Length: 285
Ligand code: NAD
Image 1 (cartoon, helix red, strand yellow):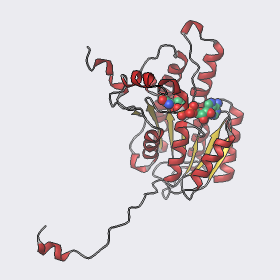
Image 2 (cartoon, rainbow, N blue to C red):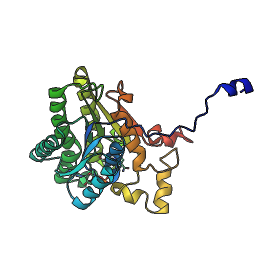
Image 3 (tube, rainbow, N blue to C red):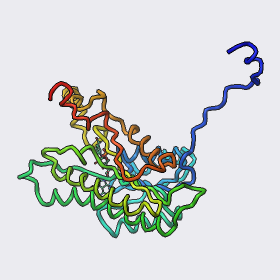
Image 4 (cartoon, rainbow, N blue to C red):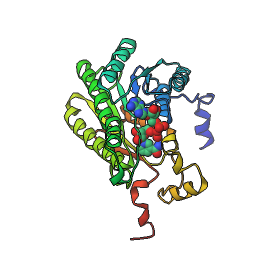
């Protein structure tokens, strides 16, 4: 820069770096939000300006801690107990949310679990349990949210969209997983439920997307990362050569829920360090 140009610059101090509250004024519900990915997502939505319902099925103390952490960002939060696979409990949860916050703008369908077994030893109970929480649970919560989105419509001062749903899927919506047929079937089901909903609801300005996490450091998969041997084996599946952290997923969720992603509908955003890139073909094939 020449001296002449520099002379014209006004004397200003460095601007303050501001955290943009991209979700200011929005009301969010995150299922299974007292642990792992759901907890990180709930806190990040709060940090971005949303009031948050922290759903939990067990672990009230942990849910209250998440509520306190969210409130420390200057927004409101409540913990609500509900089993997402139970229609009556899901409806009671949404009623409680509407009494407290009036409406819903963002649903993060995060609750999920595994009950693994070789296929011929998988019990019907374990099949139904996983499908009930991971797939039917997402359906039940999404249905309540969509009813409210359609009733209320777009409120321009809040968001371009009448509502946003983020389904927590998995790389296993596309990668088959031996010994986990119930889990992979549930996530494959989430993928086509999400896409069918997105197609049906787009004219109402309702956006539905999924996040497909790879290996994220949470209690659901402790065995896969908690010893050096397990971690080394896991890294063979991750081209980026690090495990994912819950906040990797949380930041993706904030963006997908925000108006910055307004033209993103019916897609899965994989947050997986490249796990879906067929890493076995790096040297083979
Ligand atoms: P996690 O076990 O820490 O969290 C799961 C949460 O779901 C817990 O809070 C649990 O209590 C809750 N939950 C279970 N059953 C419920 C029910 N019936 N009603 C309400 N809540 C219920 O595991 P996580 O890794 O944080 O998993 C969160 C989501 O991310 C799941 O859908 C999981 O399938 C998905 N996911 C995780 C990974 C990973 O590597 N951690 C990878 C891909 C997908």
